[in-house]
Length: 110
Image (cartoon, rainbow, N blue to C red; front, side, top):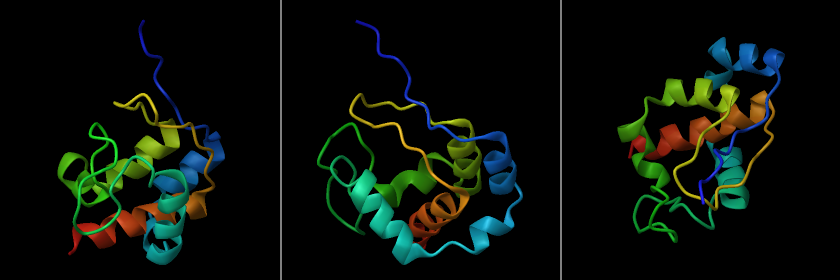
């Protein structure tokens, strides 16, 4: 059975706000960590060490190795196509996306 890609649902104004750039600078890593814990933690490792609970889900600390962080904003705005079947569809506001990316960036700096 073929898997359908999972896409985030974001409107055009939200996408434009994300692509503008300043939203990334305003992100709060602590809020992004809370969001990641709620939405992503059952599959992805969220800390500076450790394996992901789901082998197919890369640890958040390695996402910057696969994708430039600034490109993730565009992907989140357009909708992510997932490589693992359990990834849920999420509807995020620009502030939440900025927070999530600030958290991912904080992991990349460690």
